Image (tube, rainbow, N blue to C red):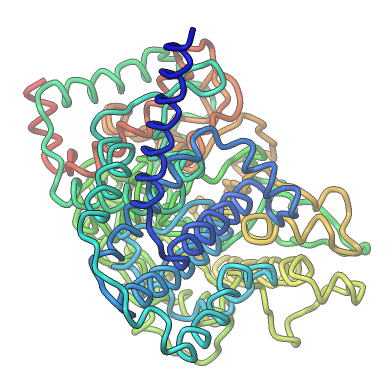
Length: 632
């Protein structure tokens, strides 16, 4: 009994000694503890903004409770903090302060970017800073007052550190502590991309890195700091072109074969536009909820509404753009390939070739192909990318008289007016691809063009600005088409009009919900943009088609109407012909499946298409498509 008691006392004493040694070894820097706590709190602020549009304190706490791997947040921060022990004296303090400032700025940028793109900036974004040209008003409109919380402490710490010159005046370098902290923290972080695929979350396995298509999940699992690390890792890993193995090529070929398994007989829409000119108008930020709607008794889109009497109107058509936004819409319309998973396809791979693109297929049938854009040639790299896709002529802002500016650049009114002669003078048959841009956020339309009579509360909001901008776009498109029709340039021409992506609901969803004067039908839009296929010769009777589809489906749908041989595109277009399908679905860029399909296997194959597209683009697969097609 006595011996047992002595042993227990000795054990306690030994444990106390061990704990004391651990405590003695722990950092003595209060600045370290503050930095760790501050960065964890700011990380949770990021997660709160990802999970909720305008997070409250309760939302932040809720976000914290939903994070199953908070220790990973701590470990990523500790890796960075450990480097402070390589500096002595005030260098230790300034390292921690600079790290806090830099990460705080990155966190704010992450939140702003997410509000605009539902994604996060990557190292690829640093190569795309030219795209910020004329976007300052849009960026400022995405800032919330609560964002000051990310940098509030910085305004206190910097003067405090400057004024207290004696603080950390004599602080030793501690290489041993650096090594220990780094190794312990790295044990749970650096190895993750190599070793961890799934983790147990809430008693079920979940992919830890659903990163490619669901970065919001990855940043919650991995922490905002860890996400930056993973982004850097992927950036350097994918810095070279992807080299496809024979198995990769076979996987791509098999995916297309499965997609084409349900080969339906032709219907009444097959070839009804055979030999006709094709005019495609991509409208900036045009959402579907405004079509055939009135506000205070006024039609928002009277000209588009008139077209519906002789149009196929797809009312469940979805935007599927990723980080390339407008340029991604241009990509999918002309190639029927989903955009690359990270960064902008046009920026990362502007020289990619697409053997069976829309302009290339029509070119082989004798069409003259031309793209008209009032933006600078290198804005999102649209001009070199569309040239590589197959357009014979690309007209940029340098070839337009910049006589009126709205938002990002030349007004739609002036742009479309100046484009008329270029379309009239096009060789027949032609494919003209026209991209507008006056409807871009933050929807600050000049007073003389705000023709809708709205209540002061509604008109002064972003929603009111959006309705005015759409009404303006609609009017200019109406004038444009009327002028072409009067001149005879619209004869024997099929016109396709669609929105590139959502506008008001993309950038200001939370504000819409609280806008005075907003009607119930204005509140949400579910990423739907209108698709209108119009024929000026009355060869189409107006019909609303409720099949769910997306931008990747437009090319095969157009080519079906144009009477192109299916063999030209069936094994290269990732989309479906929406006029001849039993399936009704779309795949959003975040990996969400919308609609329904015949089976769960079909759904999984549809979702797999995002990864297949990523491989196709990163490897420039279609550059040698005829060779692959012959070999396989």
